[in-house]
Image 1 (tube, helix red, strand yellow):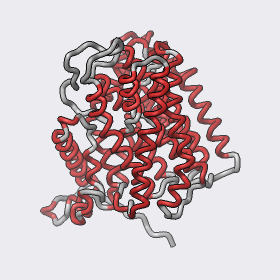
Image 2: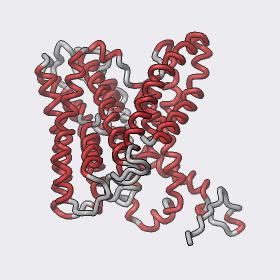
Image 3: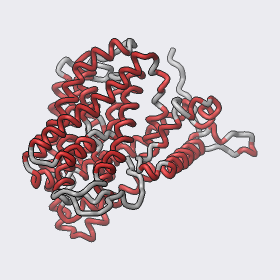
Length: 448
């Protein structure tokens, strides 16, 4: 007989009536959010000179503060995980919507074929390397896997290939490189890189099914998923985008701006629900809707301005925290596993750097700028954690493999900003702005 579901009340009757507020959903969630925000902001202030993303929530998991049993049992008991995961998941949808908004393909048209070549060079080497890493994972991490070779290979390839467009945009903005040829090239290459990576992830989700490589339903279910996903993208870009553009022109900039935030958030949630029903993942729908938002009339810009503060100030710290709570570095045991960590980091950085540098330098970009572009394209950020968490949810990645790739994501993201800053403290070239001392402006950390 199945165990009865545990019912948790929303709020307590108060401590004066003998009830502990932390045994109830709402007061515990409120305290969890407060602790996450305080730790996130505290670490951001401590790392302010290094301009690192706000990743303090990672420290709440069993790899750091969660090692202290009373802290974990009191603030993050197992029964509270569903509520925190759900709230952070909503923030994740809004974040992917903003990522889609950042992908302005006008920069791709300005840069031309070079952007396509750079994006392909940044994806191909690490993705091909995934086929060699997967057998080595079986040797270094002998845990039983539910995933077959193909889904695991595609997930690992997507994880190694992805570029954190928000981190890259933040670095370029603070270095005053947006709007100049180098910045346009970097953003165009990263935009195409992310589109390719999300297509690969959609493919991985389709072939992995619901449980580590054994699709549920009819044998042709992966084909149905891919066909439905393609139809969804075609509808969003071919039908919904022109409709939204006409509606924005008819309403005018003032009325359209008033509806931008509410309408965008509602459509993001609906798009996420639609792709979940298809069998891909809700984040894919949110990302595609961000791509579909018309840039004419300032509609996308206004929606982004209203949604971004909520996402960067509240939702992203929550998602970093939930990722930290699901990550246990202690799962990485032994010399072989830590050797695998070093290899994965080397492939993630070296593969993207080598491919990007070779193509950028080969198409006429100065070597220093080509090296800076290779470093920037190696940053992973929150986008990488999203890919990894999806892989873990689908049981494609086991706990140890997940921890290995989380270490890689944090390492590549931490290294990106200081290396980019060091490269741009030198004499400017024809494609970079002239400045005697180029520094990050304002000292703020990149959000993700």
